[in-house]
Image: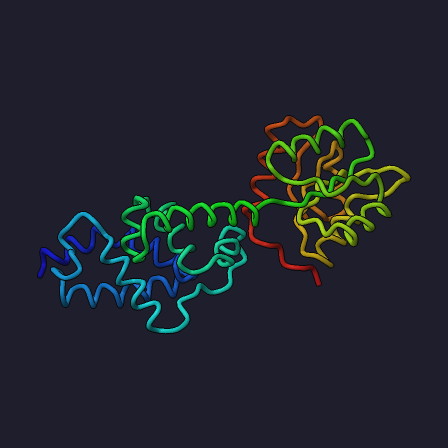
Length: 259
């Protein structure tokens, strides 16, 4: 039994990682692994504990998770987890097993009891669905038309969509209502004396919208107590800086609306 316990211990980091992704919760995932270990230790040969493959243990996690309820993850603020939660459950598990756990398509299909051809189709749809869910509708607020065009080109190169460009507060508010952006790239000092900070505050208060400030006047953010409203990319910016900020924003948890 001690030998089996040692072998099962080697599987624990992988089981915990998968269980946390499966349940959507660290606490629930660890509880699921604890119960799975207890069951596996009662029948170690049945669950192939001594083997290098963890497929039977993943199947046990599924069985216990489904047995206790709907077998769906808890709601999460993280974009990738929200995107996965929109998938049919079999597709979500197939995506996690292949992408997170590194199982081959054949192994994952066998574990989920579906044909390899069907698994390939499901995995393709799952990847397309996750990609679509993470694609951002970006509002660019910049009064310099050349810079606005440059930023828009970088956004498009990353596979996101520029839903509109504004040069002042009025145009930005109109875009917020009409185009429903999911991310805003905002200059601080705008035409007509308008402030990008006020736009960012409105985005946070009404939409919990993520903002990236693209500005040469980041000192204004300190003076206006606005650094918490978004990332800062300083002008003159590089393509890499813009793309890195957008990538971080895509995978950041949804901000809490301001009171």
